[in-house]
Length: 453
Image (cartoon, rainbow, N blue to C red):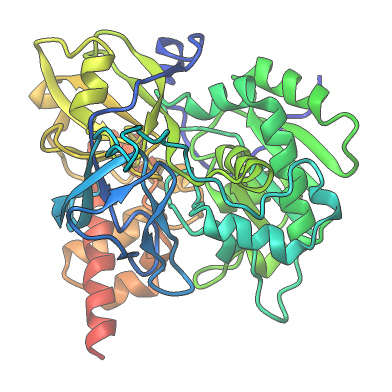
């Protein structure tokens, strides 16, 4: 048996993948109303280029980039702009958003109703991408509004623009999907295999690299087999089985597992070890943008958990309200207690269902109430399990000790700012200590202090 790639540290939460992984993704009909936030990526928010009353077609630009580290936003449906106003984002904050309501097009002077054709970027190159200028390919990726689909939502074209002095020789494709419950990447690998292959080749062309690793956790043997066969004739691409262990899908952990290289501490980036990491779903959307001229207006998300009637993977329009997606999945059970955007390890608890799906949304998890005693934190027993679990080899027990004593400088000296907030330490702690929450608050205070300085 081949050696399964992995990293040091990590934990093994129950996967719950079986709730949705065996079901093919289902396309949800376009809603009659969408709310499209202008902040769907890291960096500067997009700026609205439409006004209330404007008619738009599907795929049309409605928000232009606010800077280099930014991305355009496109209309997911055809219709009329009915509002440009503040709206709650699933990330927990309020930002500007564009509301579009589906409406029939206005008849022309001849009385005929024009056919609404989705917008396509005219510079798309079809299957001739290996002959195209890499700069053109990168521009198509930028203009399509592509961002990382694994959660961070970093603008894809920025990742494909390494600065001078940072040579890149390796592309890493992240198909690990290590968060419990989530299976949308799994379905993309099975259902859009050809697009993933084209997307990887396009990304290699843009970066000018001849080596690529595709990392997939070995709880997805069908995806490993299917992609291995699909990449068999693609030079330089290796599909690797990774050991099932959280957080295998973290950039630093995946790079270490697949290449043996260690990304330096912050502000170190994958570029510092010659790597660029892209999510497998992003690769599929790259193929659509470059070959078909499609802008980023829809994606596959997972709705799972014990308290949703029909767990499944759904292809939805960006801007679709979560309440509408839940209704499409059969609704919720009566003893729902918690809704989490993303997976349960790094996800964000939601206040209600009146939030839209955004580009970086991987899924939502619906859970029942637990035993209140399960959440009562006790004193540290100095067992060291948090140290063994930390994938970055930090000392969570010592960092927490400093913070509880009010020693922010001491925690910073112990590298609390390097914490990736994966939650492994909290998961491993037998005393149920809220370690990751403590570190997140501390990082916020340190960043605030740095801004003031």
